[in-house]
Length: 311
Image (cartoon, rainbow, N blue to C red):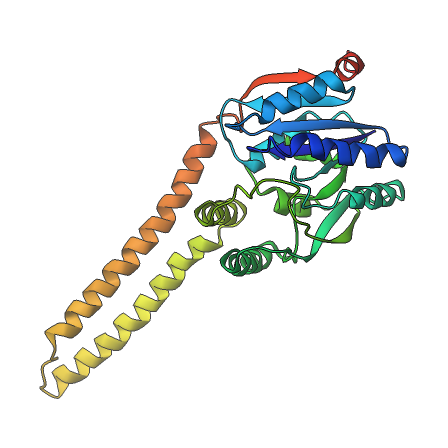
């Protein structure tokens, strides 16, 4: 059985359409399936639509968060609810083309344990978002040691991969962690489609926060900036020290109160930036050691057939 994980945040207009398109496609190809909708604390009628789907159909599981915990947490909750032999994560707005699920499933039948959806064309998006995405994936690819330039959450995973991901306690970046676990992997290229309805819920501020959070959760490289800045300041200090010593030897006083002020401000700025980076990592450690759950499910719903199969 194939489990379809669909995170949703304020996607009331897309939920039923997404189900109908994907379910019809799977039935045409004789693929037994279950759908796991994860409502990430939506403020519209997303969960109501999921509940109606579960009443009308036989293969629906719906999870509703007590508040908005973010897409990474929604994916994690979906993976925890998987009952199938493999699972695929796909966006509710169907910008990930559903027909590619069939191609992924056939590759899984051939023995591949992870089938990555790779973006061939990003589709229409704001120029700032596009440039920001390229910078983000360039940075995280260098940190991770493998190319994530066109990666996405759209991927199919074997049950054994799902079980491994479920055992990992940290709040990691799903795309990077699924690369990190290894296994027999292949890729499928796709073009990003237009949303079936509504508008993207991502803002520039939200994407920037998402990028910073994921870079810090997957790598300690930003901490090395502190060391680099310290080395720069050491070199500058040596240069000015030699300069002052030479002036002292030849009997000429070091001129320029402006120079002293600039150096003091520069050093202060370096110290503050360094403390900020260290403080951010300490905050991340603080969040982890508190051991709070990644998400809280306030209510859930299952179709009768799905509920009976779990007994």
